[in-house]
Structures are given as C-alpha cells and as structure tokens.
Length: 158
Image 1 (cartoon, rainbow, N blue to C red):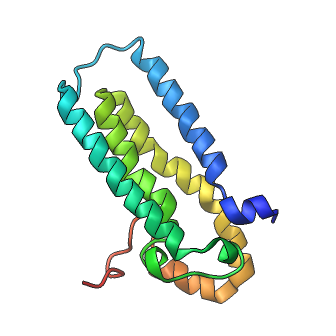
Image 2: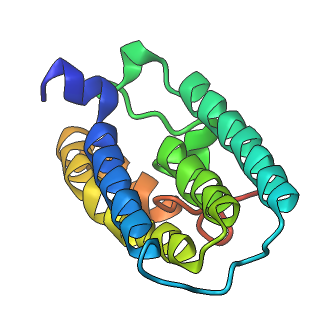
C-alpha cells in the first residue's frame, strides 16, 4: 500500500468515475427532453444547500473520527465509523449526490445518483480486501456489525 493509498484509499478513483458518469449524464440531457423534477430554481437551490450542509457535517465527522496518522494503520470503529465503514463516501452518496440531482432538475441525474451506489460498492471492494488482510478477524467482526454506506439495522442505538 502506497502512502497515497493509505491516506486517500479509493476516493480519488471513485471521484473520477463519478465525475465521468456525471459528464455522461449531462451529455444525455442535451438530447433528452424530460419533464423536470420540480421546475423551481429556488427549491432546487435550497435542497442543494441543505445537502451541502449535511454532506459537510458528515465529512467533518468522518475526518475527525479517523486522524491522518491512523489511516491504513489502525482499525477505527468509533465516531462515524461506528455506524458505517465508509462514512466519508456515504456522506456524498446519501446526501450530496441526491441534492445535486434535484438541483440540476432532470431525472437522468437522479438515475446518476442511484448508479453511484453499485459503482462505489465495487470501488471500495479492493480497499476492504486490504483491510481484511491487515486486521483479520477484528475486521470481519466490524463488517458483520456495520454497513458499507448505510448503517445496518440494529447497529444504531438511540
């Protein structure tokens, strides 16, 4: 594992794939006349701002839960990682992507946001194999208890 991979994981590759798919979705909208999602600029902008705020909170929580020095070295199961194995990616998948889709006001972007889930599941598979190799049974227990991007039922205590 290179120092870059240890710190950034598969994030840069996933981001590049997501942006390429977003560009493809934009290209499709140039040839596809579909009824808009809402047709109201203010609503779309408001939803985008809320999604940016929620995503930002998730990113800050994720980064605070996993100090740079611990990345790829320690198995972190506290903070945001108590609920999902990839909280930084989850913040974008669950909030920002859908906020952007609504803001862009075209159903193809909602489809783009939905397609991000299988894309990112495939993207993090290699990262998770490395974690299994490094942390063994402890990581297997962690995987059984937490979801990749969405908390597993019963893992969130109120």
